[in-house]
Length: 333
Length: 72
Image (cartoon, rainbow over all chains, first blue to last red; front, side, top):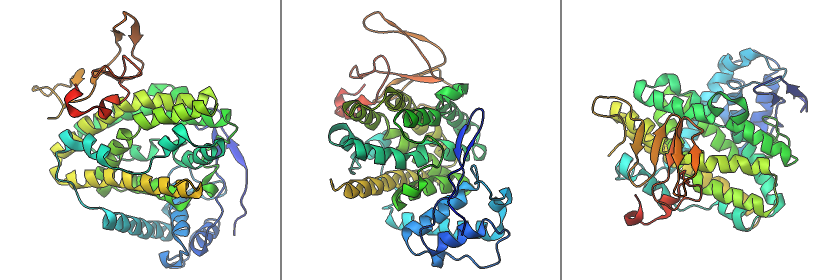
């Protein structure tokens, strides 16, 4: 079993703060996969999804396998990304995640995508972490939240970038316009995941990519895994874009609440700036993501509309589960 | 109704979103109610049309909290 190393690779610009140490295993399957990463190639049929001891074990394993296609890990050969056994295991774990999501999904609503989408999102009544932060959360709870949110926020928008080459001109141009803003419109200092890293650092937290994965519960890992799965599989491109539209449509107002809660608790301006940026940015992005990305996609490929709704629903459902989990952990649910 | 492109297939620079803001593509200076200038800072900006935004002249999503009749 590989040891958990705290080594931090630093680079001059861009992703200058990158932790690429492997996380700690959470059961038999993740233990086997983490061990296998240092002994490539993996022997045939050594790794089976049935070895997962828990949802956490399976979710962490899939998260590690996805990371091989993002920034990889120290001391793990870049070829791990295309090891047939690891890739096969990733496919099986993704299939399992998708099956569980589709089983929970009530199906597409009887609604017009362009006209009714925002009301459909607003009618979804789930627990809100932002509302808790706004009025009641303690500093410790907010720090907990920032640490587990960092698993996504420090690579914000990256999973959606996989979708770009799979689109036709209309939705592609609009998606790139949106992503360009997410990526700071050419300025690395305004890149959203850099803004978050700055906010983390100012708050006394580690700003390095992946630093707090060991603290992330299964629900957080599944949110990340679903995004990566939607992005990495061309078949699921409409789900990726539906997820994007729902994510943006549930960001502006909650970001305002987050900013108010952080002000209430005296968090530093750098962190508050990350959320206030999202109030205005996502008021734009939700319109572009719906009207110019998803509606155009469906106009060109009408058969993809159900998956737009599926991806949007998955975004809301997975956030509900995360919110419930954290509020229960904090004993405020 | 969808705000996609004009009849000629041309991309619109100004898009009126039903019930929501006005999207503005490119660099502009927006003059607010009080005569103050605000320069756009992103590739596409959303200008508030419901008059309830706390970030005026920019949209902050507040229109979604209004009953449909009061939305732009």
